[in-house]
Length: 510
Ligand SMILES: Nc1nc2c(c(=O)[nH]1)N[C@H]1C(S)=C(S)[C@@H](COP(=O)(O)O)O[C@H]1N2
Ligand SMILES: [Mo]
Image 1 (cartoon, rainbow, N blue to C red):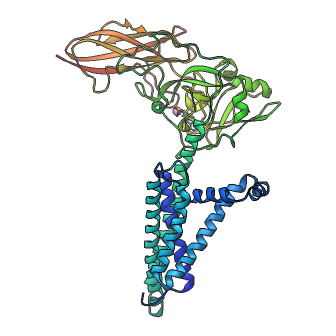
Image 2 (cartoon, rainbow, N blue to C red; image 1 turned 30 degrees about the horizontal axis):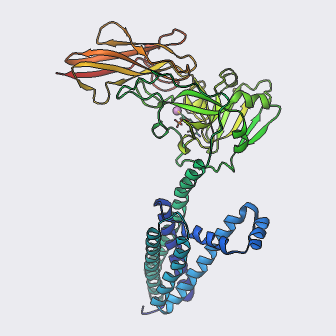
Image 3 (cartoon, protein in one colour; image 1 turned 90 degrees about the vertical axis):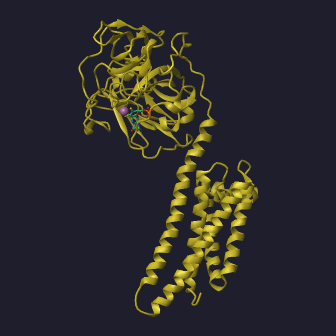
């Protein structure tokens, strides 16, 4: 370089190069399984090598802030080392680059001590970070030198170049840092969930009778696996909540407001129930509906303990992400399966479905009831509106009796012969007593229902059909446990859920 950058600039270049290098490695750690976070590895190495008395003193002085303080200290040391490297590189770029690589190697050495990660990937990630850092250092120093030259003459392009590059390096660092935090939060959550054992419910759901799942190819299974369960929420980023830090408040118009920890909630008597959850935005024939075996603490128990006050007519669930949903308090008292759920199909709730706890209320659409990532249960009057109410949705959201035709499935072109028509029907809290199917303009025919499991849970059905060549229109309708046939009236999803018979067109080929 014909002319050197000023010392202050060179130190800044080194700092930015170090930050960007660390950002790249952290992002790799977040994105690729087997790559450790080198910052955390260094932290672990520090904790391992610090004498016990110092560690205890730090915990005593800093409490739960010990980890953030440690990580911030590591950041500070890295920044100082980076600045030093920049100053060294100002005199001899090769010396600076070598120093950069050596410092990275120390981080990699700490990373190699992490038992669960891949040594090869750790070295590769370190090499990538060092390469990015050294390259950025080179270009920044060049730009800083050019800026110095340019400032001798007219114009400010040199400065603009330097600022652009510096901004780019800072952006790499920030994106890496933030991105890895997002990604690693998920990884940590997976570990936290794996460590949780659901308590044995005091009221388990009964065994699933043979014949409750017809196991017809293409028919939705009785229980939708968690990974396939529909997901609806306003969260751009799934909240990752450490159950040890999570609290559930029961408050508002109650005599004894109280707060539960996750451990306390898990220690309470739990029930299991098979409940079909539906989104109000589910179109006729749509797939925003699913059935799962939920486990949790009945809401009425929590309300009993809280002591309802006069006028507490609405129960509002609040989420850590600000979402709210409210429904009549009487529902929580009458529907004994309404619960604060911690388990879904035998597992702790998945992150997407509300870990560590959510509400599940049989018979109500999710938008008024099924608050995920639950942080508070607030007893209030009817004047308070949940999230979706001012956005054009009905204040109350009972699930409408519905059915869906799953078979014949996608494409709906089949060959002639004995072909089943099959689907699911649901009317949570009322149950399903019948499903009828009509082929073209023929008579309504009674479908065979799967064995009953629970009124809150959907029921599969099928009708054997001798499919004759040509185009056919198939219509279905369900009757709920009160003997009421679902309405024929077609309504859109807003404001209170779609209604009408599902209709499919099938092409039968020779
Ligand atoms: N925190 C939070 N909870 C929420 C929502 C949300 O946006 N945020 N959406 C609700 C809606 S509209 C539905 S239909 C159900 C869906 O639950 P699922 O994603 O587990 O299927 O969650 C409910 N709970
Ligand atoms: Mo929904």
